[in-house]
Length: 289
Image 1: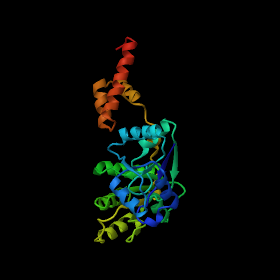
Image 2 (image 1 turned 60 degrees about the horizontal axis):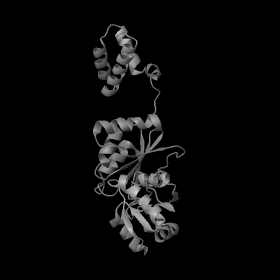
Image 3 (image 1 turned 45 degrees about the vertical axis):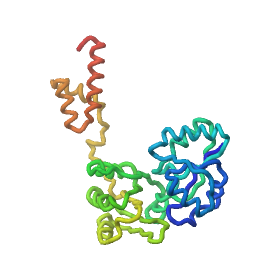
Image 4 (image 1 turned 180 degrees about the vertical axis):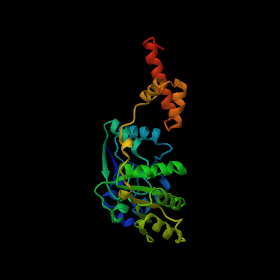
């Protein structure tokens, strides 16, 4: 028994490989993110294999169920999503894991991937990069996520919907003004478009585009110019929270007040509370509290 993780076109149907077509025809069933979308693809390529829904809302239980079905009926299966490669910012990994846990062979049938396609036409160095999928929607969380990219890599790839892409570009221009951006929309489709340049310039061109709120977007961010050396004092490794609390206590601050100070300085409240409990427990065990 084998599960075939099968990539489907992201726009142009001619990108659907003969191997992928033959795979979908030969398996016992196809696990699809949206059976309605996959049904249209199957009709074009004369594929009559039964479809089963396996998406982000039911995958936790459905993946186990489908893996058991493969064992019980001794059949192969294929996993597809609406477009592109399954499990890459798309559902599927829980079904894959369920199969692996049961000793079922898992094989990729590679093909289209929006992230790799966008990267290939960005003109940016592609030796190392990191894929982030969809970034947070809330402004503060989005800013923090963007600021994290230069700390982790020189090239970051993100997905975004047409309704939020302008907001994303505005935020990039604000927090990473030195970033270069390659924005690709409707890759492999009739109205495919890629805009490249400084974040602010690309933002202006997008704002002037009356069709900006159409299609799906993949952004490649070259943030290598945004990577700066941290001040020497920040390069020093931060003390564990327990030591930070003890340091303040030795200076005469009550434990409760020391907790408050750390939280106000940016430490997470639950982590500080756990550190304080750890200190209390340790002192009690030593009979000195």
